[in-house]
Length: 161
Image (cartoon, rainbow, N blue to C red; front, side):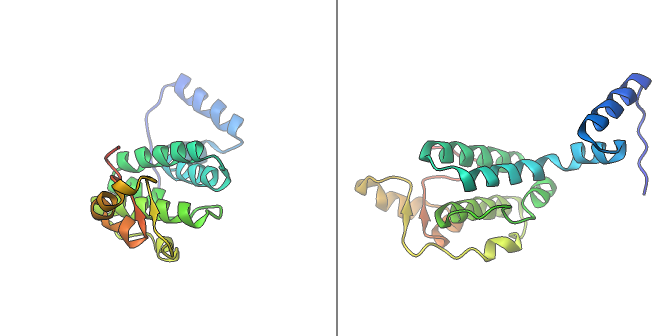
């Protein structure tokens, strides 16, 4: 199949230069820019989550993933989360990410990606807060995908604490 678009001579030259700098053919470059950005960003964030040790950095990466998942249309989300994380995630992080993806898919009326089923729920509960007084609240307010994975938070995709 072929797609034709009208561009000016200057625009075509700019696209050709950008494709050369990326080491790609012009068609491949345009397709990557149009269709691959969400998939690539999801993979980058998951790779980062696999390598981050500090809790604050992990929270920022999860927040960035949250914002991206919340902003995607159903078709964009399906493509962005189709592949499993490109790097091994710690069990807590893997469950948190899988729950975020499952929640986002449920909100868009999509089936969960197959790779999320391969992530076993945590054996012991993980709470978003260490405050004992908040645990009952977290137990009752966590969205279902998180509860199924033994992860207890106050809000998820589309909301912030």
